[in-house]
Image (cartoon, rainbow, N blue to C red):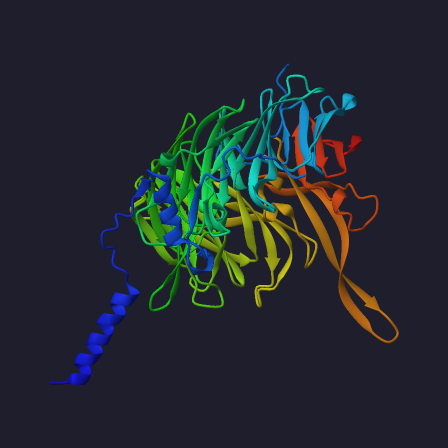
Length: 589
């Protein structure tokens, strides 16, 4: 008998038992808590060593009940709207327009600006806040503002602050005198929000040590709360959910639905992991959590949670899991009852690879396409109907066209290799895609200037780059690379506008030495005419009086109303003729 072989087999079996945890009696389904003490026991047992309280003494449940919540410190006119991922699902931004007024957040103020007609442009009103506003929604005569805030809990001489999200709702039927009609404070830091019709869905994140902690040998269970004006409402115990599975608590995610007038329609809290990214369709919120798995080697995984939203009602429906990490919200999409997601495993300096997974409504994988562009990483993704478009990069920019018409058998139709890459892909029409990213040296992969390209995918087997423009040299950048809301495109108007910070390479020659260096030469909006013939540069608009690093004068957004182009910085709204780009006027803030 070969005892060495037997010992080796036993060792492998023991290793597998340690590496692969048994599911045992876990159901891996979401369950509501039923009692306060059940919540306490759950947090006590799943916080992990770093968060485990020193004491397990007197229990204080709902310690903050009744405590003060307070904050620190006409005729139709064509106009542009916020660039969103899903039509009909509005995304918050710090600038909005309704075709007559511009609403913007800057320097802890909200400006309501009469913008059209431009000859009558003026500041109608200004709301000064004692908290930091971030984003806004506009819906008819209602202005919804999201702010960072804090709630304080007093323990004798000890005071502790907890991040909250303040939602202020104004009636702006009289733009010159906006009236605060609802003041809502939600526990947790602001994560993101969406507006569908007359409902607003807000997602906030709370850290576990803000929920459960100790003070003077007392265990404190600080459950999520909402304050509406002066009334405090605790999230009902049966509206707080956990998964019947073994895990350490990363965070708690609160999902709240309100009407545009501020009525609380529904509220739920979920202990589901550390949410990284959110995608929202007309029917569901999808929350993606990054998960690390250690087996024989390191692997990343993404957990997806589907939460149904309909007329303000929130209902957890399903969760699923795929290999790899996602880049951003554009890596996810829902279409014809299927959820599609693009992921990357590893990094380009390791053995990286990329995948597309298709999941059914229960978030079970029904189709997949793996090992795309091995050795590269996804730099941008866009799902459009029965197709997906991916850009991966290491030295070249493989632009992939992927057929998703059969969700059970996705396939690569064609790819195009060109220098550089695209950070953001935007549909021109069903057969043409705009990409914005960086040019790169195809031999060594070093990035150069800002690149905007137009791709033709009429023949998906042979995608083509119709035209491209490159702006500046190394160091040239644009907010549109990282924030799609900074990207303004209108196909009917043949209009493309992006904010750009331009650097150029300069050579300085001296009697003793010479050097090449990058020089900052411009910041503002680049304006192009774009059609299927390609890009035509129309001009550029700046808010800088001189070339300097005046961030407050950096153009961050552009929008149009009728035939007027408005560019926005923290200091100014500038108005230019959309055809000639001649300045019409400006409003100083």
